[in-house]
Length: 298
Image 1: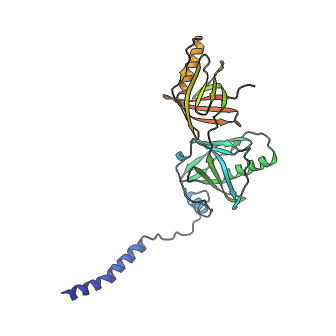
Image 2: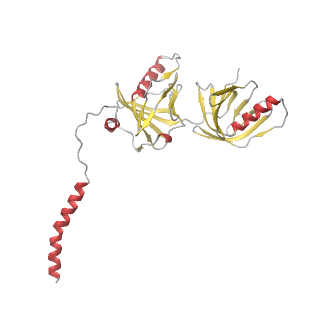
Image 3: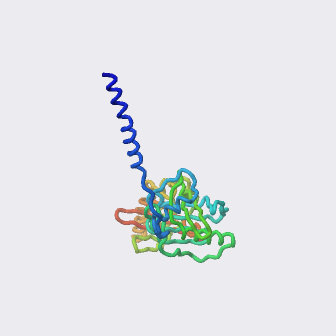
């Protein structure tokens, strides 16, 4: 009986090996034929992307992972060589769903962008201010704009690093960005306007805002106010606001109450125009808007 079982088992072994071999080879995808797909297609871009040497530990996000954050250029390589950055002229980028923008180190720029299947595409020209710069800054501005226009892929380097890979006429490279640290501490601002939708209201009475390490305060136009705040990257949360209780004219009180109510619902901020302006973005019920501040007059 044992011999019969042993004989049967031996006959099964080749059959099992054959079945396993067939199953294994059936999982290997057939090699695709040479394609003539244009370079602006996802498949062709992915092939180019695979040829670019990358830093380790990259993963590819959806766009919400990097939107709403101001990123500062911290590493730049072109054709395998590092390009020296100029700390006194930082290059930044920010994505806000449909448009990107920031500073080239000299001028402010913006452009429409599309992000699909991990590919970054700028369908229209980049627009920018026209300030003059010293040659070293101007050169980097031109290189950066050229790289950005040629960019076609985006990925993250863990932790907290955004990589934009590109292939330009000058060669392959990547731009490495890190989130900007909070720049609010020990700054003073005067309110210029309140914007809701397409309507902007200028503020005739002086409304001020001062940041310390963990609190804000100033004049709301009539009363003094203060509150605690927390800021991380470009996100900000303002706690309950305390005020003095003076009485002023009706128009002053209405503007003050409107300002303080919006200030309490601020969610993120931007410092723009070479630190000349501060924007606080609020969401008050179904109203989204911006409080725009300027530096105090000297």
